Amino acid sequence: MQGSGCTVSIATKSDLILRDLELIRSFPNARVSWSVNTLDEQFQKDMDEAVSIERRLAAMEAFHDAGVRTTCFISPIFPGITDVPAIIRKAKSHCNLVWLENLNLRGGYKTVILDYIAEKYTGLAPLYEAVYKKGDRSYWAMLDEEMRRFTREEGLLYVRNDDSVKRPFEEPPIVVNYFFHEEIIPSAKKK
Image (tube, rainbow, N blue to C red):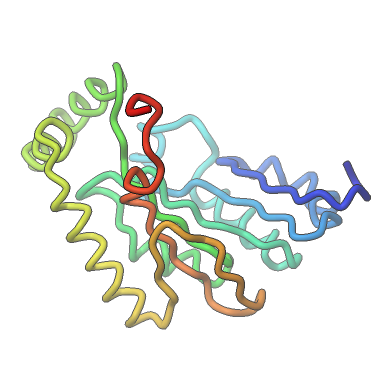
């Protein structure tokens, strides 16, 4: 693919990608995103078997320092657990985009997560019950408003469902909220 002019976009939870930094850097408009939904390494270990958050952020920094566009993908956001402002503060000097996506629970995974919350975060069980069993979207509306205020205070551009805005590489990242993406992308079940 090298030399073809194609655009490369890679999403990862790993720092193994560092071995290919020079190759990826050779593609025009290459972009690499790292999933980071917590700064709490124990919570991260409970949720996935990928490398530590610190290693992901270090890889993001290395790519950004090499001139490759990077994205901090804060996903999935766990209500009451994921500290979105803290992650943005930690990553904002090493990324061009920040994507925000809410936790969506489907199938058997829903029971696993709700049981985990009931056991490890007992105080949050009523919130998860409201969001994931009763369909209450007020948490996401509240977080949307919080992110509007936060990004304004931090001097960051904040948009919903649109990462097509282009800015110079050196500019602070654009924060893109995908909490409500199902409003513009109908599910396959509804078709």
